[in-house]
Length: 92
Image 1 (cartoon, rainbow, N blue to C red):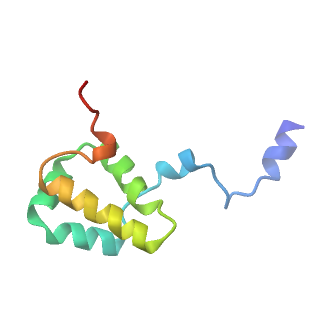
Image 2: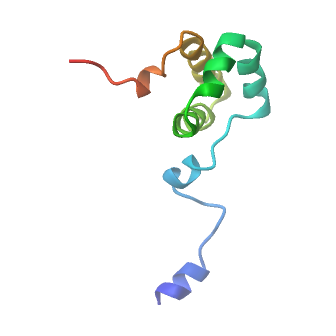
């Protein structure tokens, strides 16, 4: 029963946590990040796990305007040498 259900699955559909591991910045988004030298240097020195989560956060936006707003936030925070606000734990 379980094997039959597995065989019938639709591989084009995936849970959001499965897409996170495949998330990378698109070519246009990466080009914008590269234009800011400070942001790019910080991005390149960031650990892979942070890059994966931050890329997923930007690229998972359904609307282009949201994606661009998130990218601007990523560039601003990265150029300042800090993590994205949502990934930066607040101190009590």
